[in-house]
Amino acid sequence: SQMFLTNLTVSDNDQLSALNGLEGLNSVDGLLSITDNALLGSLSALSSLQAIGSPPTPGIPVTSGGLQIERNAALGNLDGLYGIHSITGDLTIIENGSLQHLNGLTYLQSVSGSVTIDNNAGLLVLDDGGTSTPGSGGLGNLQTVGGDLVISSNPRLADLTGLGHLALVGQELRIDTNIGLHSLCGLSDFEMTGPMLLTLQTTDLTITGNSDLMDICDMY
Image 1 (spheres, one colour):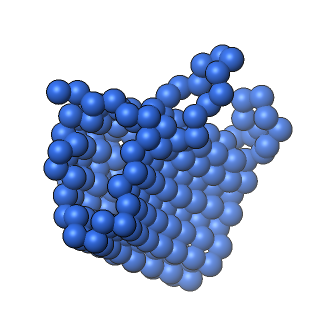
Image 2 (cartoon, one colour):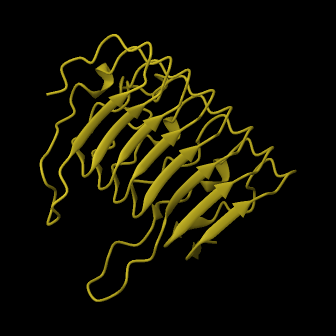
Image 3 (tube, one colour):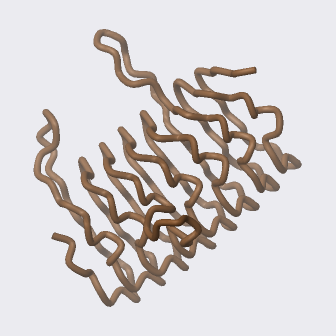
């Protein structure tokens, strides 16, 4: 049977290794938060999930939502999230020490808020080449981020392959303190923009603290 929820929090479950029982979850209208589950190794039970957050409706306050995947020490991949095409709210992937790539988000096209990929000690690549089209795994189909895109403090991340279709970041693109990062060539199709939509915020690019960075590539 299908399941539709406003918010879902899975947090601080020390012995939980999988999310069995959530196979029927089709959508979360607000926030999906998966945090601080020390043994959680799989998100495969979320394979029916298609949408996170509700698109704004005129006259109705926007529900604060998004996807949080934080401090799940045993989580090695994001498989199970392939059905998600858009997120209304923020996407945060923070301090998942065993996470090696982001291929489970292959079909994600838009995030209305900010995207933060921070302090994932085992993150080697955004796209591990596991898809038939090179560069389409990871975040390879992500085209728009309404807020900031921050990639920071991922010490083993070597390049940004898997962001080649990114066309719009509404606020700041920040690449910060990824000490193993040697190239930005995965962003070669990135197009910087001026003020976005009806706001007065301009788009900024910050590249700082990446001690091994040798090649910015042609980003314009």
